[in-house]
Length: 249
Ligand code: PGA
Image 1 (cartoon, rainbow, N blue to C red):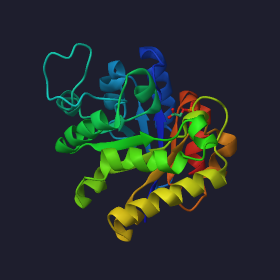
Image 2: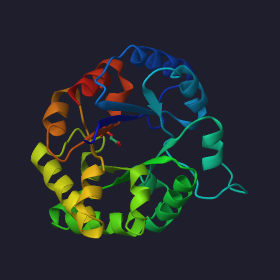
Image 3: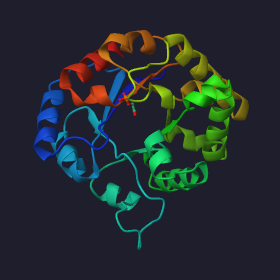
C-alpha cells in the first residue's frame, strides 16, 4: 500500500528564528504511521532543520539542486553537498523553477539522473498552465513533461520517485483543482505509467497534489483514490494549518 505523503515547500520564506519556531511546533505533531511528513526549507536552513528533526519522523528535503557534480556554478548547490549534511530528498521541477529559472524538461532529466546517482528521493513537480487547461491540452502537457524527464528511467529507479501534480493556475492563487479534477488527472498519470512500465509499478508510485491545499479542502482532495497526499506551499508556513493538513492525510 502506498503511504500518504504531506510535504511542506517553504519556498523563499522563514529566517533562522522563524525556522526554529516552526520546526519546534511541528516536532510535537503526532501523525499516523501510514503518513510521511516532509519539510523543504531554504538551503540556508537545511543544516539547522536536519539537526532539529533528528530522532523525529519529520523528513527533510531541499527545494532544488544543480545537475553538475561540482564546479564553476556560482550560487548553486550540488547533490553531494546535500548528501554531506544528511539531506536525502529533493524537490525538482517546481513550476516556479520552470517559470523563473528556465528549467526545462531536458535540464530536469539531468537533475533527476544526478539525484538518483546519489540515491536521493525526488519529489518531481509538473502540471499545466491555465491556458493549457482552457485549451483542453492539459493531459498532453502532463504526458510530455513526464515522458521527457522520467520515462527513460529504469523500473527500479521509480522507487525513488514521488510525483507532484501541481496545476500552475492553482499554485498560490487560492484556486484549487476540484477533488474530481485532481482524481481525473492522477488516474490519467497512473494509467500512463502503467502503459509505459506496468500496473504494479504504477500502483506503487505516490502521486501528490499541489496547489492551494488548505485545512478546509485537504481531506476532500486526499480522499480521492489516486491522490496520495499533497505538496503544500502557503499553508505549510503556519504550524496549525500544516498540522491540520497532515491530520487530513
Ligand atoms: P500553494 O503552493 O500551496 O501555496 O498553492 C503549492 C506549491 O507551490 O507547491
